[in-house]
Image (cartoon, rainbow, N blue to C red; front, side, top):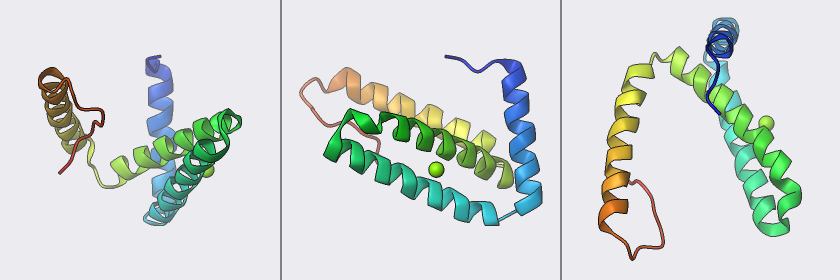
Length: 107
Ligand SMILES: [Mg+2]
């Protein structure tokens, strides 16, 4: 579901406030959250659907921390350009390779 404009403003304001208060220390939190997401995915693969809530929680944490990283390093425009490029590449792969069972964007 698309994020409403008001929520988006709120996300920016809250993340900016966090970056202003704690600065580069937020990178440590990002790394911690990435590790937690990784762990929740491993648990899902080992034990199944009982870990779906954990995955959702950790994805939310990672999204918030990635937003802070984006604001902290002023990466918004670069990320948008990269995402556009990578989605085009992925689409080209999907359009041209009907036999591949593993997808991805590399490099
Ligand atoms: Mg977490």
